[in-house]
Amino acid sequence: MSKVKVNLTSTITQKKETETFKKSTDGELKTIGDITRLSYLEDGVIPVKMLLKENELLIKRGVDENNYSFMRFVPGEKEACRYVVEGRQMDLTSAANLLEFETQEDGSQKLRIEYDLFSGLYLIGNYTVTLIFT
Image (cartoon, rainbow, N blue to C red; front, side):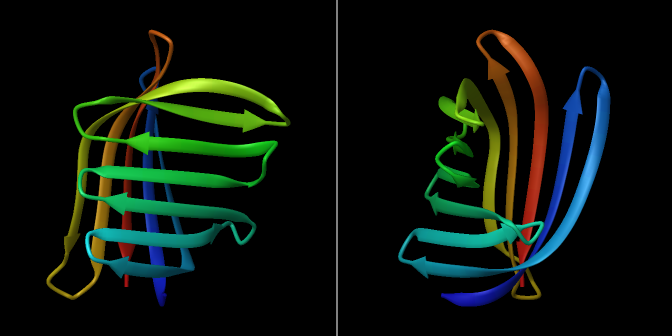
């Protein structure tokens, strides 16, 4: 695995309110064939692991089996996701509108995902996440 700097920008829109978060941390990136794996610690404590395949992104974020989230994104598809907090599970659905992974002119790599998150038929919010690895 290669050591990388991870720059994360996340924009969340819920009920007409929008908030943007920016974070930067160290991580590890490994690419074998068409599969890319990224891992880092969010806020220095919460492990995040990503697996990127062609047209599919899996994200697992959490500290243990009682506190984690598992998200799956496939453009144009609705995918089952889950959040577990203090052992209580909430089943959600993601609808990915955009999934891009590309190498930039400066040699860095950029992952961008735009998705809607649902609980049943209820729209929780619209999300845009951009990660740049240098």
